Amino acid sequence: GENVEQHPSTLSVQEGDSAVIKCTYSDSASNYFPWYKQELGKRPQLIIDIRSNVGEKKDQRIAVTLNKTAKHFSLHITETQPEDSAVYFCAATTDKLIFGTGTRLQVFP
Amino acid sequence: GAGVSQTPSNKVTEKGKYVELRCDPISGHTALYWYRQSLGQGPEFLIYFQGTGAADDSGLPNDRFFAVRPEGSVSTLKIQRTERGDSAVYLCASRRDSSEAFFGQGTRLTVV
Image 1 (cartoon, rainbow over the protein chains, first blue to last red):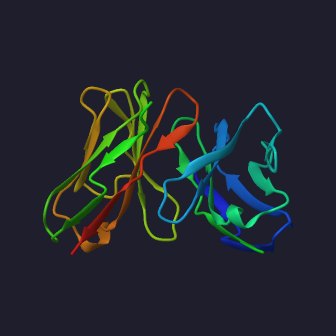
Image 2: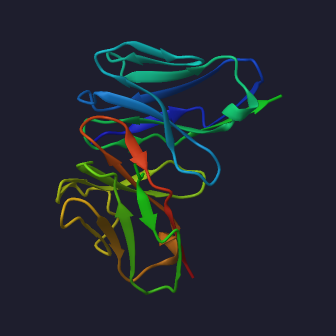
Image 3: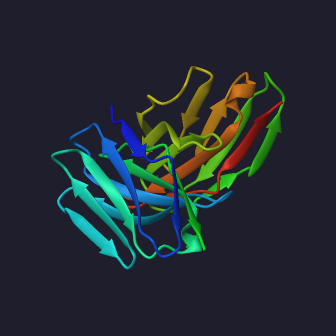
């Protein structure tokens, strides 16, 4: 079955700097790769997603890249702000949605 | 419209008791997922339904855990003979086709 690994587990950056979170997956049949943000005590919420027929997708300060050959995908956040502080999860799926272990991002003002 | 709704939001039960956790998905969403999330961890897959049938239940930890979705909408996760290690937040998510999965607010289960 699918296995998703996520790094780093914690990431601290200064406000305005960029943050990059990386994930690898094992099932080459996976075709959909969402990223979720979870604030303390809240439910996970989708921030961006990418499908396997696309290499890169951008939405304002957030971008995701996908390398199908290497089976890895990354989340890039530019011009980080304190409100970006949260736990971020990647996931991979054909139908069964499997999550990574999460990255706690702290943005210091 | 309404999002994914989970009840109860909190449940405290004694070790050895039986509990039922309910999930009301978004109307029209054919796929429904159950996850377990412990503090500081990612959502751990338990089971996934397509319509009424369990398409994949490989994440259920043992035979004390069971889930149903008899009419292809509401789902119930059932845990028998609860143990302290079952304490966690149980998350439900629903999805239409291969699109975004929407999460409920979770049920925090505490076994004392």
